[in-house]
Image (cartoon, rainbow over all chains, first blue to last red; front, top):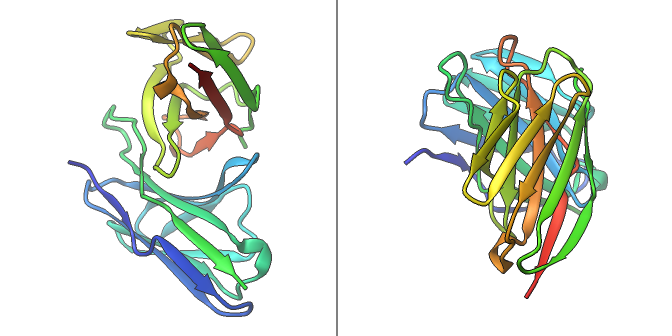
Length: 114
Length: 113
């Protein structure tokens, strides 16, 4: 059974705090993603990683950074949390070049910044 | 980069009717088009996908069609049931270059019993 696990289901942080959202996958996938989900706006890509230490900006990278030191782990960092970053964050992973194209999602982290 | 637009944003149908959700994409290099279903409080899960070398694919009550020339693809659900109520997302990807997956804005489907 494939698994993508996000470290927290719910988080409440204060404005200005540095926030880490962790995601781990056990499928040896090359690609990992961080999306933000807001009502009416769908799944917006924040950052994408196609290999260890490699990353690409998505559609809304401002205010975020990422880290991928190991293949199985992809971290999203909010350098200085703001109230407009209150949202649901979804991590996903996907293989590359194997023909198995399905992306698998984590359970989501609902972040509230107060 | 790729831009995916999805319509309608909400869709209400009577049980047993058909539902159609449409998406357009901008990057002609995209070659993989999945559809995900997200039930309330759950993570999105793949329900069907299509590759650019195929025009249509069916799986029981769901089907997807692709028009590469017009750069649009659609999800068709026949004989809808209350358990089909969910948010549906289309997506596009170029699996030959980087594998970035771009999603549409989602459609909330409500099936009334």
